[in-house]
Image (cartoon, rainbow, N blue to C red):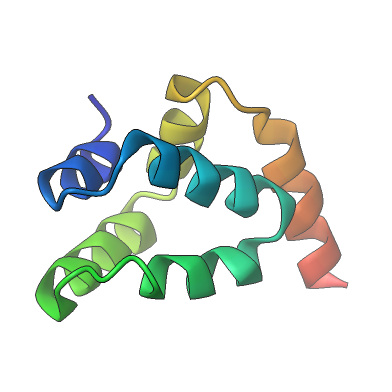
Amino acid sequence: MNPILAMLKENNISDEQISELFKTLTENPLAAMATISQLGLPQDKLQMLMGQVMQNPALIKEAVEELGLDFSKVEAAKEQLQK
């Protein structure tokens, strides 16, 4: 299992919340940051999660694919942010 998904599940984040988070991420990465902060993760876990993503951005793609979402939407959103 993807370490991001595993950490969220370990912290009692429901499958529904995880799917919604990654759906938001594929549509609007900035909104996903707000959603992550609303999950109620302890600060140390949140920092660890962000650290993993910063060190290995491919984890996001793996998690999106594991959840059966469309990663091309993440790429399109990223391009919009860079404009």
